[in-house]
Figure 1 (spheres, rainbow, N blue to C red):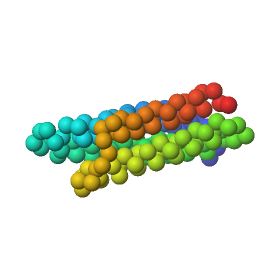
Figure 2 (figure 1 turned 45 degrees about the vertical axis):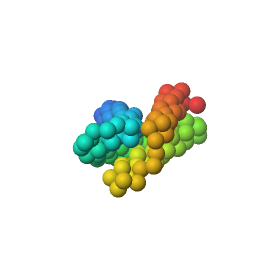
Figure 3 (figure 1 turned 180 degrees about the vertical axis):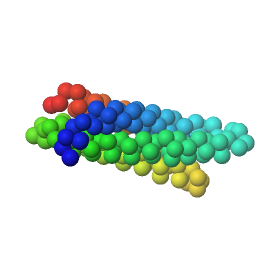
Length: 149
């Protein structure tokens, strides 16, 4: 099994990187859609339904599968012998940041349900501020993996 994981490692890593890019694109864009939804949907008849469709497709068709593939490939890479040295701090900071990123993903999904039920209470400014969360987490993850402190 060890040899098999080692042989597949470059392919798994490639798939992981592609999935992370897709997931991050969604994590950056969905809060921006929420900003537009809050600030503009009330001004145009039917706009709310259009935003809800866009948000649903982004979350369920792009972000959810990308997050799952990111996690699966990441866990396979972690199980590949010789890849992660757990005596360093970087795997722990990366892991904590990925868990936080996953929490943020689910937080966004809950906000979508708030829009659907008419219970959204957040402003465009608040969504703009929350849009910085994935950026901070991305910086921590990339620095952790590249610098390996």
